[in-house]
Structure formats: structure tokens, C-alpha cells
Image 1: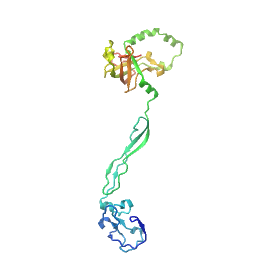
Image 2 (image 1 turned 45 degrees about the vertical axis):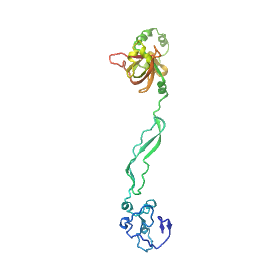
Image 3 (image 1 turned 180 degrees about the vertical axis):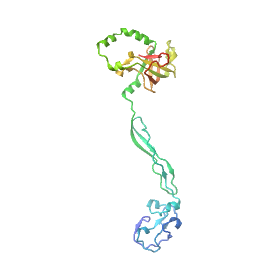
Image 4 (image 1 turned 60 degrees about the vertical axis):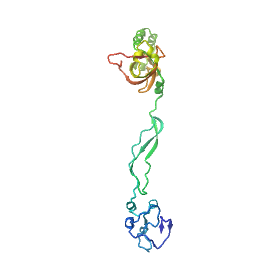
Length: 279
């Protein structure tokens, strides 16, 4: 006969001191801490030969939890409580916007283990993930651009000179670019975050308008659009990202701003005119 709790195997006539209680720790009034081989309940009659596996003894010490030979009511009789956990929660989003990262999920402890009960399993799991919100090369390039601007009054001068522009004659000679023909003027609303002191000494409207926290309206006109940029203005910024600006009339006057909105209809201010134009 096999006795896992004692680590031996043989056939024997049982002469144990345990109380016959039909395999019940509660009825036998047994509940021992640690490993105690004498804390046993013998289901077969005393001095009987064990022939049926169902008659093998069961134990009421805490070591039986590891060996697996506890009496059926050991946990209840001895106040043993296993750890209970909730179901897994949802996987979190990837912790990086671009490249290799990880996501995790968690579960909570509903019941802590008591009196030697089964310990809690892992509460956090992680797995690899790949962030796909990567900035394209065009976005990276736009972030490095510096916008050159002039007060909107120079827009009228630009229009007056367009009739004498030699490029107008070249456009008549060469085929039109469909991409350019489909492009439209637009306006960008910026929030100024930094202004150099040199701007405050300028005599034009720059010193009045360019103040930290102010909302600036800048127009991208056809004359300032660049073909290699997909017919947009240089330095028109990225939404909610800081970029740089400088005035063409005085390069010492420069600073930073954040693009807040792109408008297809200009100007930005109702009943007014743009503050600046892209160059």
C-alpha cells in the first residue's frame, strides 16, 4: 500500500492511533500545523488490512495541501481559505506610439489566502506590441521647418506685382500642373508660445500682435506654395506641435508657436483680415 504523506510504500496491517471518523477532520477533531504524520484519520477499522484504495488514510495537517492527501473537509474544518482572483481585465493600449513596446492586463484579489491556503497567482501579465502611430518623413520635415512671415499688408503688393512676373509667361508656355491647379489657399491659426525681445522694438504691427498666448492668423497664398512640399506653404506647422517662425523683414524677430487649426476659408477673423502671410 502507498502512503504518500510518509514517503513509503508497503502492505501492512494498520495499527494507527488516529480516530475512526469516516475520513472527516471535523469529526476526528484534528487540525495540525506544519507537517505532522500522526495527524491522520483512518477510514478503515483499526487492525484491518487495507485492500481498497478508498480505505487509505487521509490527513489533517497543512502539509496535506502540498501532498494532496487531505481529508475531504480539511479546509473547512481548519479554516483554510484559498486565494481567489477576478477575471483578467482588458489589455491596455501599447505603451509607445511608434516601435516596439508592451501592453499589460491586470486582475484583482477577491479573497486573500488564510491558514496555509493556496497562494495567489500572478496579477499582471505583459506581452509585446508594435506602435504604428509613427510620424512620416513629411511630418518630421514639417516639424523642423521655420515659417517666414510678413504682415498681411504685403499681400496687396504681391498681387500688384504678379502681372509683371515673368513666371506668368512661363506658365502660358508650359503645361499646367494639375496638382497646383487643384490647390487652394488656406489659413492657419497659431498660438504664440515664445517671442524674442527683438520683436518688441519693431515699428510695424508685429510688436502689437506677436505676444505670448495670442492667436495669430496666417494665410498661405498661391504665390507662397511650394511644389516640393505638395503645394503647401513652408513652415505651416503640425497640429498641436510647437514649430518656429521668423519675420522676413527682421530675422532677429523670431519665436515659437503651436498650430491650433487649419481653415479652408480665409481670413480666420470674422470681418477682419489675416495678421500675416507666409513667404
